[in-house]
Image (cartoon, rainbow, N blue to C red; front, top):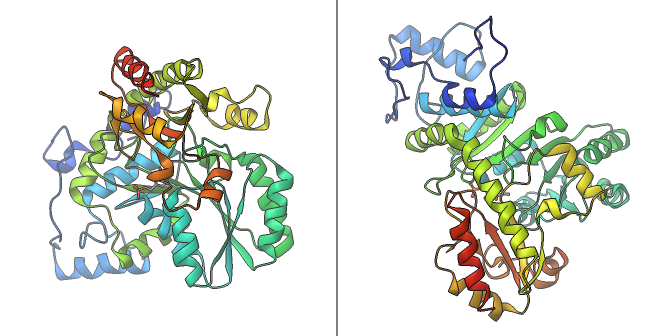
Length: 418
Ligand SMILES: *Cc1c(COP(=O)(O)O)cnc(C)c1O
């Protein structure tokens, strides 16, 4: 949807309500229908031939339309256009889950002998993909434990250069669940350095899940590919899974071809739910962010709480704080905190909660809380986990959009059980 020529450019909050959908394309339906069809009827045999030429050989023959649901469908086009607008990208590819999107980025761009240089900590699924499946294909991974310290990052890059060609730099910021920040300007300098050393510029992929498009635009900070688990804030209701990647047309076309072959296309029903959820994303993001701030402040002042890793609490003037202020428009609504005590104290707190739900995942309308050491980070060895700041007293909270007074009262009551 273009801005009328006599008006200034439209805001994201306006575009997200209608971008990617023209009512005239569906009998004037004000809202996009759910296109529940696995295949599409060609108008003629010649039109079918043209369509295949356009899809597989990118022939510029003017053919438009759909072939088969795995290759693309109308609902997918709507949400891809919407995500591209939100991320300020040329194009976007949407997958069945966030991990399908991450796997596609890695498998479509890496080959035997390549190295992935990544921030730490990273999402457990990404960690396992790198350290179990990709390693089997001869692709290695090296992590940098501090994403704001250029010396630490340079040292990891040198180690990675010793192993092979660095084809991908992967940054997750803020990180799950510690809210560690990766300074994307430092990463851009690191990539310049790597390019000089190996005469090949690695791609930069950013996992933007923790903040989402309204709070962080990774592409404007040099990312080639911006990955978001749309299961979280974009879906926003904890009722379906999806994953998106935004970027320039060439790399996104490559991902779409890969997606067709492995069959990880988002289905019609989830695409319909996602299109609807995008419309309220900015309202949910804002309310959850306000609630999170109030809860983080309450926890930080509570005697039963040992520490809170909310991004806004990073010390004024520290490298992480400066990077946060440069690259984020808000602090999001997922963070972690530690109760005073051990696993048993953390469990007593969880079991005393009445409104907050004990579950993994984040970004839904409801407030969720979990104990990472025994759930999301169960598979990470204790010493590695503790080095990343996740111990037996750590809890991760994803704040929802309920009334703040009810959330504060529930947490205060449950903290008495610690
Ligand atoms: C949930 C999550 C993913 C994976 O997304 P799925 O939709 O669950 O596959 C990737 N990265 C981060 C930071 C996440 O929180």
